[in-house]
Length: 86
Image (cartoon, rainbow, N blue to C red; front, top):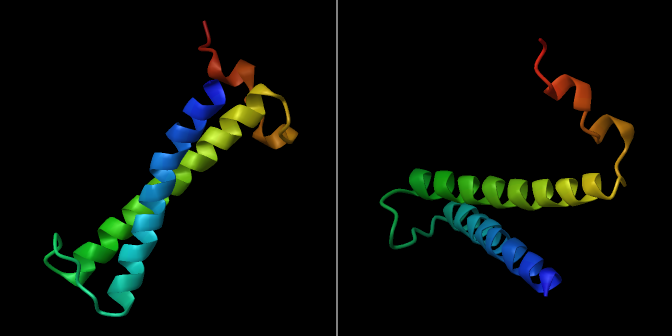
């Protein structure tokens, strides 16, 4: 059940990233989608969707691999650095 939930959590940002790529591609070909008033705004929103979706999926995978200790030493969290000094 947890794997299905994780898939659903990753599916939504993945779809948003795909829609962002579509919006950017349509801007390159000069196709204006209905909710947007200019091609620049359409490209900007598409870029934000793409970067946000990709960042969420990448962060999710990095978090999962850190928990399983399957990342290189440079990607591991440094526990001493996160504690405040007294």
